[in-house]
Every structure is written in structure tokens, then in C-alpha cells.
Length: 406
Image (cartoon, rainbow, N blue to C red; front, side, top):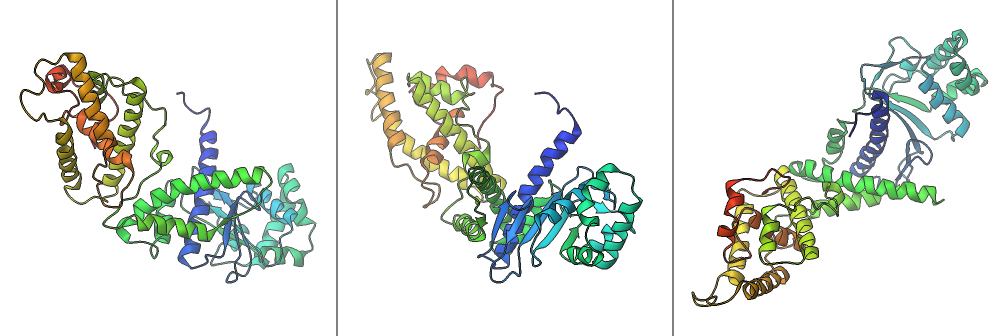
């Protein structure tokens, strides 16, 4: 894959990503502050917007100005700033609507826009200084985008800027996680903040995609904050001592057609007993999902010390029920074809059996089935009675491939 055509293209993409995640951070803060009757939209009224409930005075519109260079300052003659002002004025917001320009950069010291920063706002001075800067400018773009503002009466300009707040030094695209985690302080235990943030983000991106598709089809409905709250508590509910969160494949990067394990040990194990190609493909997917799932649990410290090892011992005991012969004479005189048939049946019976769960409420079958394939990949278990001898060469020459044991 080649390099991006320009750093500006990467910056634009990061800007879109930041816009979506700023909206998530806003939704989480609404959950934290018990505004569950509010709602959030993306690209409906603005980059994103908070729609008021009975405890919020009015809607809040947000324009996200993300920059790959956070040392960059917005000046009074910044074209993007005036584009935003022009959009807001043309939208004719009601007097109770608050408008926010959010940037991970700063603003020029001593500028009119500095008088709009949250915590030190002075709409009167901001209006006068910005109007003066426009009057002195020779830029056609500035003249074009400030036209609506300059046509206002001075008193109306002040009224407009009373609704505008600039938020500087907001988290960049790589820092928004921390803002989301802070918003989750009340919603879940501190040790779970990272796991909940990761899971919530995956759900949110999918939910925003659905929201935008609905918007494209003419269905203009924001995302209820209650839905975000329900999702947070559903995630938290799976973080009990008797359960574990299950991440969706799209959150983990597991593609349904990711079948690049053709030479893996666990696949060769299945071929030893002549398992059908389509069945092997399904086993590969189960291996991939279980491997990624277990990695996530370990990454977020959701497993107790030695829990995976204990679980694999339990699974190995189940394997022994199906694959250890009852006597030394059971397989005497059986040819290879008949032997494979017997062990395919054993494999199928084990695969369909009610395998033990890693925790009582983890009911997803791929966790146990995929864990067996992970163990088969290490040759801790096998599907053919001579699996170690048949695959000794693989052990002596390790394969360089994706995957492994988690």
C-alpha cells in the first residue's frame, strides 16, 4: 500500500475521525450528567450537535476544527473560522442555541477570536475587533465568508457572538480516549474504563454509520443519549466476575474472509483426519475470533491470573473424553481411512458438545471451540492419534505467520 498523496489528506481524515469521537465524548458527558433525555446528531445541524432535553436550555452546535499541528493558532483572518461564522449565520439559529468552535490548536494572542474563548468571553470586544480585522483585509475569501456578518447591525453582531464560544486545546484525535474515559468515571469502575471505552467506540462508529445512512435516506433522527447510556451499562454488566465482554468482529479487525492460515499447525491437524475444506474455513474463523477475543481480555486485564491456563486444562479434559482410546487394542488393525472416519466423528462430537464456558455467562461458542484450535496449534491436543509424530517437522521448523496462542 502506497503512502498518502499528501499530509493534508491524512489530516482531513483525522479531522473526520475526531469529529465523530468528539461527539461520543459529548454523549458520554451527557450520560455522566444525567441528561439521558437529550440526543446527539452528526452532520445534521452541524459537525455534531446536542439536542436539548428539559434540563438543557437549548441546542448546542459544534464545529470541529482539528489540526495535525496543535501549535497552529487561529487568527482573526482565518478562512475556516469565517466559513464557520457564515454557516452559522445562514442557518439562523434560535437565540437559545449555543454554538461552539472546537479546535485542538490555539488562537492568536490579542485577537478578537481570543475574546470568544470559554472562560474569558467578551462578545462586545470580539465583535468590534473581528469587524475591524475584516475591514482591513484584502482577501477575497475573507470578504466572501464574512459578508453576512458585516451586513449585520453592530448590536446584532454582539447578540450573535453571545451565542458563540471557542474551545481551544481540545484533545487531538489520538487523545480523545482520555476525555471519554473521564466521562465514564461515574458509569463504571476505574479498572474497566479502558475496556468500556474501546468497546463503546466500536459500537459508536457503527451507530454513527447507521445514523448517517438514515440521514442520507431522509430520516432525520438524532441518536438518543439513553441509547448510549444503555450501551454503557450493557458493557458494564458483562464485566461482572461471572461474565466477560464479547467484542464484535468489526471492533477487533477480524474479517469474515480472513483465511490466511492455510499452513497453520491447527489447520494441518484438521487435514490429518480429512476434514472438509468448508468446515476448515469455519474452524479458521473460530480460531481467529477466539485468539483476538482472548488477546483483548488480556490487554484490558479482564482475566484473573492464570485464568486462561486453568480454562485450557478444563478444555483438555473434555478433549480427552473424546480422543483417548478406551484400550490399547481399540485401534489395532484399523486402516488409515477408517481411522480418520472415527476421529472425524470424535472431532464433530466434541465440536458440537456443550463445552465448558470460561465464565458462567460467556455463552458464545466460538470462545471454547476457537480455544481448542489454539491449543491444537500448539500441539497440546490433536485430532489424529499420531498427530505429534505426523507434525514433528512443523515443530522443528516454526512457521512465520499471523496468529499464535493467546
